[in-house]
Length: 199
View 1 (spheres, rainbow, N blue to C red):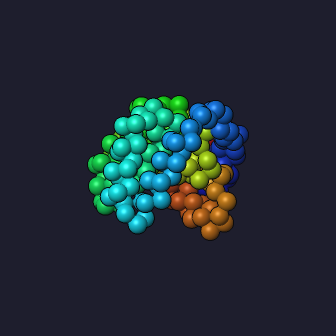
View 2 (view 1 turned 180 degrees about the horizontal axis):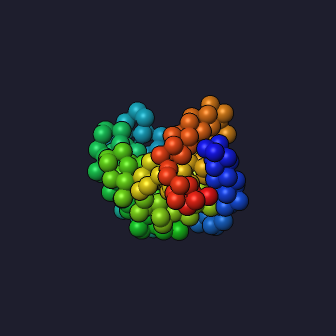
View 3 (view 1 turned 90 degrees about the vertical axis):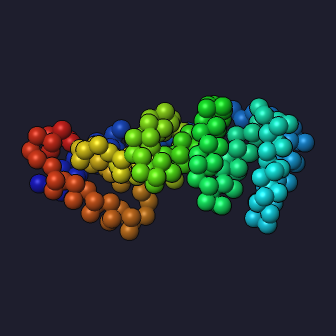
């Protein structure tokens, strides 16, 4: 019965899964802004402190520039590189609050959710993903989002549904085998009323 249930849940996920399309228009980037951004980005590996100062100055000059969200995200990368999770989260939350329509915003929500889950706050992870436009995510970000939502699920039924969605879009066969094993474990925990809820 478990395999039949798993097949039914996966079929349901196939019917409800969205094939994302990035539809937002890109803002115009001036040549000066582009040069400044890439100059700072080129320093990230060799001199992250200089890159951090450069991106902070960049944001003072172009606080609403087309590349401002990416600059905030790079500052989060630098903070994570030195182990400053709090600073990284502050930068990432700034992206989603200040630039809600930026092309990177939905992917940034996934990054925040992964960090919040790793910090042991599944409620915060679920909350931030609740505002993400899943259809606009890349397949990689979508898989990460479904994995977070499965891990943060409040019950076995919800976990099963997110695992089923993850399985639908997972291209790696070895990963699919692992997901199937997880699905089997979850199904084994479901009683009859929850079996009905899951399908």
